[in-house]
Length: 593
Image 1 (spheres, rainbow, N blue to C red):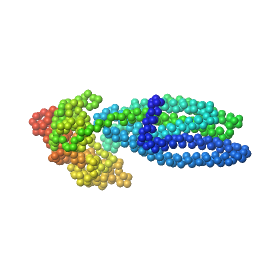
Image 2 (image 1 turned 180 degrees about the vertical axis):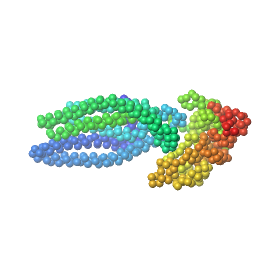
Image 3 (image 1 turned 120 degrees about the vertical axis):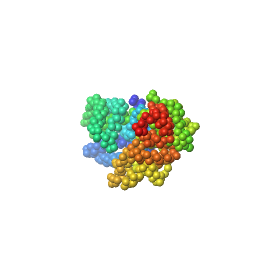
Image 4 (image 1 turned 45 degrees about the horizontal axis):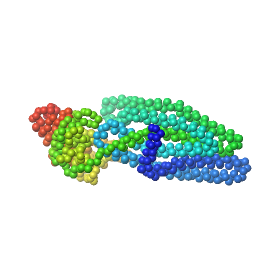
């Protein structure tokens, strides 16, 4: 960052902070001035007190009164400093909370409003990671910038105070502090470049560390004996990252040492000069304290500023990424809405390639799903089934062709109005680990008040009743053991894969939407339970769209769509596809026999 970019970055932090909490910015400025000026004032009156004491000792009776006046003023300054410190501590904590909360909410809201295709965009994910890093430390950066102002005012104030005594002394002290500041800025920039270049490796390491600390992964990792290998992989990535960073610091150690030596020599020279002045009776004795304290303070404040610059420079550089992320256009708001469930969902000559690829995932697909119809989409892995579901939900727009809801094109409809009619159970369903069973089910439809009867029905339809009744806390049980209260170990449980899937099904049933989309929803549930669940689904008047590899489920559908390599190759009822003796029969041959 150039000096101009640096100042603009600081300005953006200040502007954002002021817009969130104007009082916080004002108090921080006042705090910087008070923290920087009061110690200088204390030093000044301490020097006067010392000189007055020497004069009193030498028989100057008028000096006695001045001693007590200076002591009184010094004590008053100390009391003001202590009182302000207590008040400022509370204000700082409150300010930090307000700023952190506002930035976090702003980031989450923006992230959740982006166009769906961006969630698969690696460049956007990288940018989001960098922006998150800045947002997490925003309040810290705000505090650090405040501390920087304190150091700047303290250093400049000390130099100015020295100038009243001797201008040349002030200039020499000022010139001594510059090398350390410059070295710290250069080091911080190298570290920022290192961070930017290693973000993929760092994310891989964090994901690996997180995965190894999840209890549900322990069984497979221990059975396969890969734990030591994974620990070694993590250590290799961590060491490579840290070694490069330390190498940057090593190249600047001798420069920093030289700057420290220069500062020490300047301080020593200043003290020798004032001692000679006092011996020569050109200055009173108290000026020794004045010079010693002010030189020491100027150097220490400058060193503090250099450290703060080193800490904050990298984060200020990341404000560019934060701004770039926040400037990503959100998904456009669409005015057209639908108020009733469509009679027909039609896919007309749809082709699709994922953004930034030229691989055709869907190729000229056309089909129609009528209201209340039960359909199954089948095909081998990679046939385009899940992608077709994403287009039906409006998460992506076709590269070519249209998805129609009756006479309206889905691309023109506000997605949230269409999603109100959809209940989704994806193969990568969400388990809200921080929540209870009741809350997990309630998240199926947060627009309606919690309804015990509807929840009971949803649990029964998902065949989850036996699990709930065996728990001491029933619906109020957390679904991860680490959420248990230390004084109430039965307040949490650990569900099996099939039980998690039943819970997700219960959430879907609680939503009670007229259109149900299921993507391998019962892969971890036994075949008999799955048959009973789908018997209910396929006997309802809901529009059911399911992806499944189980023939027992597929054959219950009114219409089966057979996908192969992105194309719709066959469609019809189970009996019709058997009669065709084509791709469907080939895929399910072993199950049919």
